[in-house]
Length: 81
Length: 161
Image 1 (cartoon, chains in turn blue, green):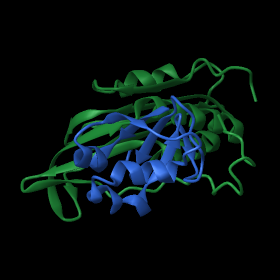
Image 2 (cartoon, chains in turn green, red):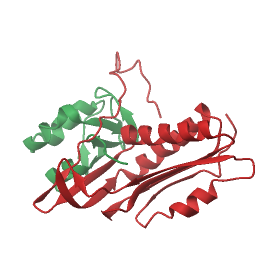
Image 3 (spheres, one colour):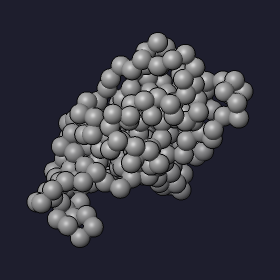
């Protein structure tokens, strides 16, 4: 199954794209998805401790499990205002 | 909680924010106060001269979070209407990046709600600011939104949508 992954701010500059479709296994957790996405981009891993994850536009725990078609965003610290 | 807050105005925009019009719009005959917050682009950051800013957002989630803030403001304070507008894209020094207006029968609720709305926006809404200087650019230090605690077991916590 596939999920849509979104990158913002400095993460988008590292990946070079704002979104990608990623194949995950059934029941995969967001933490595992992040490891998958950062395996070829070690630069991403450096930011892990400051990120929060969103699943389908709601903040989600890193151990939340994924379903096909989910939209997952990796969000750096927010600085609106 | 009232059934509907349809006069509320929650937007992301790439245009100049019509602050005066919005401040007028939230006001109704039963109101005795309108409190506004105008967040604007400062010409300096951490001792460096800022040239301009760029804002980007996770737009669908940002709008959802801004609507949640409006609902929460209605629940917590005796106010009438609220408007929350955030601008995206490139902003020049002195331009308004975020504008909040709250109307209420009395000033205390209007002030308190306005303060709560901007403080909550800065902590929870997925918007990011990049600061451009003469000698480079940086993503602004931000706040880590409070995220849900880890689920005890994967099955114990249903999706919270």
